[in-house]
Image 1: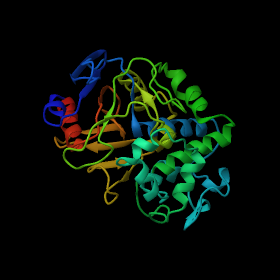
Image 2: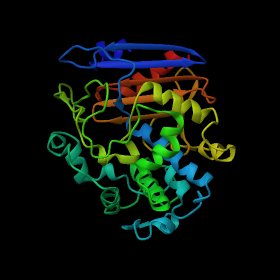
Image 3: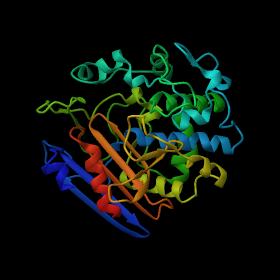
Length: 345
């Protein structure tokens, strides 16, 4: 953790490891560069694509309620939404959304959206609002990455569509279903989908970004306040280390889903060739990764402007680690792999 700060220049790091009733919490650096406040165990932070595990869990719980099937075509629930430029919602199933084999274009790679969210354009657009339909429309103006079911490719659009299906089926907002099916049953008091809120509720540090620019010496900006509607059910969640422990340990320990749906969630597709994290296999909103030291860990990871999070553990959830840093620059994937090796090696 110290290496994130001393070698990587990241403002601060927070990690919490639990095994049974034992708990270790460590911090490095600061939560706030101006005040010098240290990071705290109770701090809330944006978790990025860790959100996808929550979204997949909501959909699977609706499957358990008999509201839909993983084999349903997207067109059944969202008629006319996935179409154009080679996309066809009749050929894509709900399962393919959740395991990233749909081939649907990832809206965050759209050139116009990239210009607004990478580099100085972000400072002008950080408070822009996007509806879920807006995000899907951005994807539809681009060609698919591949034909459904023929390959694997990471696409945030998949999880926006999955949440839209949940809304169409229930008649409720996705945030309300997330509360009903996951947050309230588990007592996740620090976890919420922010909607139009641009700040963070409760205790939190600041989040710092080079605006996703990789060049050395790029200016660092405080981006704590932003509108996360552009990430929504794919990456907009706010949580705490303790809440992520409670969620993933329940998920991995078989306490959130019926056995058959847990098996579906942890039936994986190799990500090789998908230009993603090396050594990973992707299930339904979760993945597992073979660490450099040889250990395999299960869970999720995510990034959003100013915040990177990893939440990974043993397959049964008995030993689990959550780590967050409040900066988004440098060679972070190998650094997180080293941190997880230290936790599980």
